[in-house]
Length: 526
Image (cartoon, rainbow, N blue to C red; front, side, top):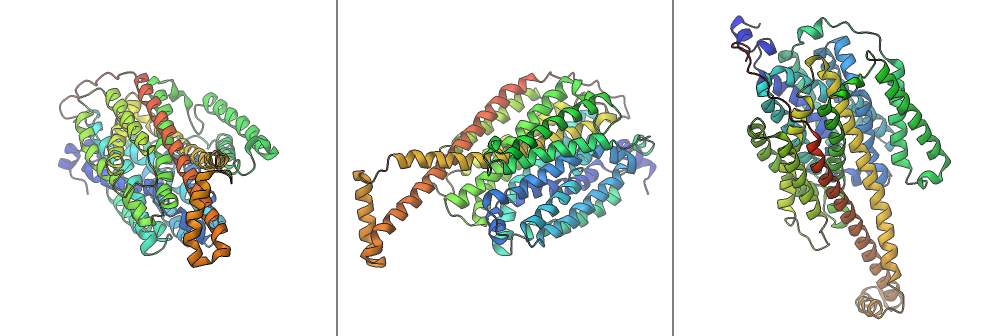
């Protein structure tokens, strides 16, 4: 029972300490974001276990993100229709149950279906949690609440590979999904106890569900994902089905935008984009999604596919990003109300760009600790990106529009992440083939260096395979080295392109308009 003293002390949360509310909503948010990354180091194992290629295994990540993105804009309507607390509990339940079926999946098709359901259940967790947090603290303390929220958002993807690697090597890749079950149960209990709906949610009058808008959203996001995932296999626009899918994508996207703009009571109200800061934030958060998920997806793959690390070792190597995030989150919470957030945001993107550029200098001789400092600084830089961006883009959004705004922003981040992963996967395949052709053009049979190296390897293999197999074996080893070097150069290309994207975002951060500081609240309103 909420006492009068508690109600007076914490009026915004109906007498519940806002930090208990923070802990309650951070659990499902942490679980949901963790799941976008925890499977990244297990992709080769999932591919091997389910008879799929590595590029097909990345659909485990992208299908989740797209399903997540589809439900995000609808989360505001469902929250008003069923109550935010009840809808949050439903989403936690769906996510937790779907996690079990992901772990128990016997084939690639089943796990992709389970991931779609899981993504749909988890789609509303972030905007609901963010809306609850923003409304649980006074305006003057929102930087602290966003720092706590950002800690979960930033730390979850960076500890996910480490945890996923340990579970994969120690037990099985399936436990990377089973780990969600106890967390989901604890989140359900805490939300039931500490989270309450605000009066405007309880008394909200909700119109009919926008079936047309939701259908158009499903069509264009689905077509986008199919084209991104399968286009590489059929030479993109060289295939008729790709051209048809792109046409359907464009028509559905234009229809969805028109529907959302002309029908303010529809699934999504795009009029919120009239706000300059929110419009700028939506663009940057999509770019941020690309940057984050590219590194999340391909850095563990680099260590496993190029350097031969185990899943746990690869996860452990990229784990120090979590240390950087832990250090950066309280610092940004302190600096957020004292320094122009545009400076902090630009500095965060610049730091990320520098780290990505360092990743672009890797070779086959690096050790586990070579990239320790840049990986740690990546996490530190990301904490300086997320919190200022969230604070600035939501600073001038009314509370009643917060659910609509956060749903749209998170949708764009996930769409950006899905596009980034698909583009990176395609770039790795195509650039590796290009570099292999370039290297092979300089390795003619008459090349004296090639003949010398082949002779040395053949002499070594002659004692183990016999003279007849030594010469073909030497060329086989050299071809394997050429493939490894070509793949390495492809990874370098992707890292450098990611650095350029982050530099562009650092400059675009200044498109934000500095928000006016809110006036001090009257006594008793803090």
